Image (cartoon, rainbow, N blue to C red; front, side, top):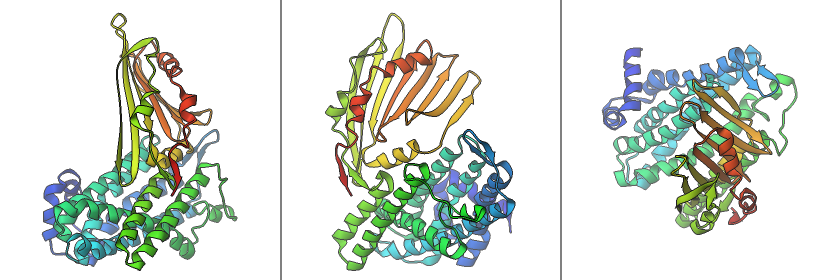
Length: 416
């Protein structure tokens, strides 16, 4: 194995994908060579990091300290993750290959595996971030999103689809991959013993379950909604009804990010009424709102700026109705994600208060910061700017009718 060549490929696909994809598409290759020369090696990176996190560094458990698991259990989990990655790559390649004619492309299994393997590069490399205590989740999320972009760039040169159809090709592939992830989890659970609680039963001798109100319970409900939408998509595809399949695909994407509900975000004028005339004693100088939608999902945002020429203080208020993506916000709100980190000139803190996720950031050198809170699992309210201290931003948030906003949490919500 030429590791210098492998590292060069990783660097090029991440930094210069537009020029690297045509090179990849033109290379002679086989399924075996792609696996042995790339997938088996790159997929092992996040697997090894996950093992180290479980067995060596441990996970931080709020109020209890750092939890380590036995080396045997950690190895078992790592093997399952690795096998899942290897199988997942091949099945996603099958999906890409099967969809090729639908989007004006040419079926070629080797090229489909290239598109899969090299677009996964960003996620595999970002998997190293699991070892980071605070930013790891965000980095891995960024890697996944960048992987979608890599797939979008790679489908035209590898599968010969027209550029104008690449976006739709990418979206449908992602939807099918979401279904795959749910189904693959349960298949691996049956074959390898991965059951409730991510295999915690094998560590304790009993099956582990989560309360419905807990983060694990919320995630389980979310996954169940995605799986149900996947069944509808599969049935629509078997029926041969193109319109029904398109509608089911939209429902699939909606379930993935909304928690199984269709949500019409608040109208811009309605959301704008929550921007007060004054904020923290400062007068409003400008205000605006908008609502955008894509793939059947809507998100609305209202923004205002406040200032005082005499003091020089300025504040910005942003209220976001996550609408069709509120399921993602709800999962974050019910997660155990918390942070308390000191910087050279201030601090960053994330915590739960009154059942809501709150985020603070303050810089002493510039007297600037940010204070935001999740409201009713649907809205995000954020105040940022300069003030005497963080308490100034916190008190400014009191000028927003947060209770009135929370009262609208079910407005526009429809069963999916």
